[in-house]
Length: 368
Image 1 (tube, rainbow, N blue to C red):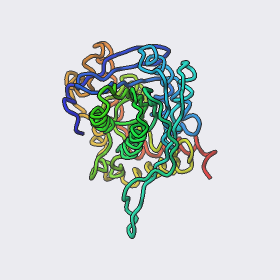
Image 2: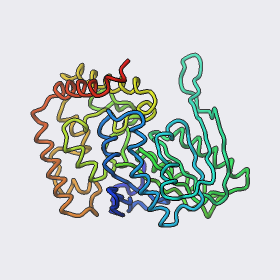
Image 3: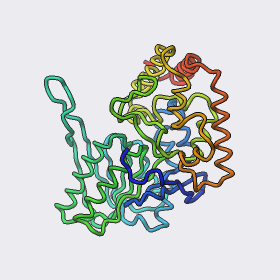
Image 4: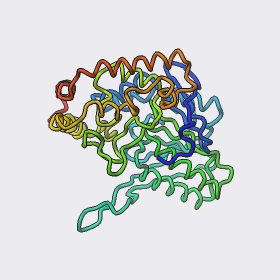
């Protein structure tokens, strides 16, 4: 991770309305505005890979709509142009939320980006746009929803869109981006804003809305304590920012913290449910195979993102909760210490067998 002053960043409560908690990320001297939203349905989505199909989309509607209302009230959105980067964007209810909050959509644009493989080893050689239907709307807000891990596809598509605007002698006012993603997104968007302002000095920047937290990815060469995780694909809490409500819900249960990834493959969860089921079961079966090789306490420490014996003061700093009310942080810290104590007598075999049974029973109707 390469974000200047990250240790000084805190999450600051912005609003609490209609069951949605919103925090602004402050202290990083950012060019853009970054928010975290937390809501019951999106928490359920992130903690339960059993949520699949249309429910994936539906889970994001309340938080997205409430954030749209907030941005409209702040006059951050005027004329909207929605960009759908297929197929990840189809999980995000941008159009529906605009409709609910009476935000005019001027037009919608579509792009499809795919990997290019090189012979003879079939290695990834780059990206290419397979389908593109763009409409340049001058002085508009470009609205995008996507899951962003490495960010390669997002950057490739967005640069293509910006070049199209420039060819049409049109300029964007700002870009609103709803995402399930990580710190890599902040690095990318800060760089993009600096580049865009070289030719559009008045560009207001990105308004980025993260659901439930700003996570991190395992990086190259790091397969995690389990030896299973994939670089630039699997999200984890470590070194990220987790909404207090999401932390509370996750640690109120035993098993969600130990899942392979916070979201898994969003496209598969929505449209290729059998593939999603296979991925989740493959992970837990892999845990079973490695149960005697994995240090459970080390795995727990990796998933929480800090030492198990961390003090309250250091925990607050590590979680970036300095601006969260003390009565809330002390309760959350106590809950985490209680969680650690409660799972010390558990085994990975027990957790894996439970998850395989629960997941199989919940989604057996999809299992072909």
